[in-house]
Length: 187
Image (cartoon, rainbow, N blue to C red; front, side, top):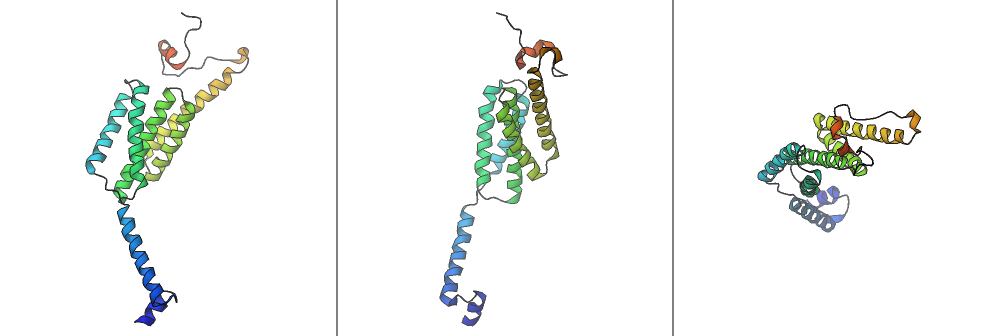
């Protein structure tokens, strides 16, 4: 039997092979210890938060909603840093993508376009990892809005004779102050 152990262990000898086996067993126990137990209720609460954020994004001040979304996203990131089953990992990855999308959208609406672009790239990575086409489309739409705004801003730097008024096609004129096109000299 000792001869087989030497052959199986690649010629490291019986004692060296035994240490290798013990090290491998210890590594397996350590890997199991790194496994995070994600409580199903926690996942349900995170799902409910995402639904709430989708609704509140339309009516709650973005500066008030942003820290709540960020907290949940950081919680998901901590779970993803550990090991868990594939089903939980896929669920957490989708949640991470949804929350990163909301961070991008809120950042965009608060005027921090740099942060919005970074969150959008992260949201895309999550969505792509889990193959979530609706989230992918939402992220691409937000990125398209960002590109339109950047083009409009660069067009604003051109001489006045070549400028056209650029506004969102659905946005009523009365709301333009909210997007930085307020009346000059008012006050």
